[in-house]
Length: 289
Image (cartoon, rainbow, N blue to C red; front, side):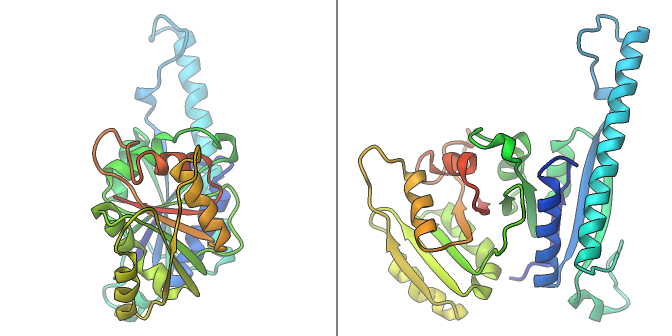
């Protein structure tokens, strides 16, 4: 399965420039259509903090200031997206070129703004796309998650690519896939196939007794030569840290993992390993559940 559509959530914050640059780079690589999405908070949902009477002049001024701030953030986000689109020389295409199927084999881009509840709008829109690209600011390193990451992973049913604040020099040349023989890791494998097929190196990282050798042999049907690496438990070292260390040791520039699909979302692959990796990794992560 190829990647034909990519959506990038663009907040206008510090992580947005790297997010849109990487999303446009992937659109060029896979000849896909990339949409930059900015969700403005509906003014009717804004609550003036510290104002008792929502109908008072003070509340009106507070909401007006919040609306202005949202508009400025949207303009910043749009500027970032348009800069990345221009850098990657992507043509703007608002609708599918049904009358010219040849154009479906070329990359394109479009900008979209919605007004609503933020993550709710993102989740609803992202369900239509093959890949969801989300950034994470350097300011939230060591935080357990962001609302957008949690909502996208749990509710979209689509693979999520979490990018560092700055676009990495490479992504997908050397890929580490965490494998534990579960349905979640199988979902991540399926989502990652377009990346794996184009990679120079594929490393299967396994904790415990799994069928990783059989998987490596099976990937040969896709023309993928994968190497298996056992990740051995070390006393007082968490599974997340062990997987990250193993990925770094193999020179991976992308880590693929499956996320456990039951609530709460934090109980994921290898226990809490995914939660830990999402919170501390500066390595791009491709997650699916």
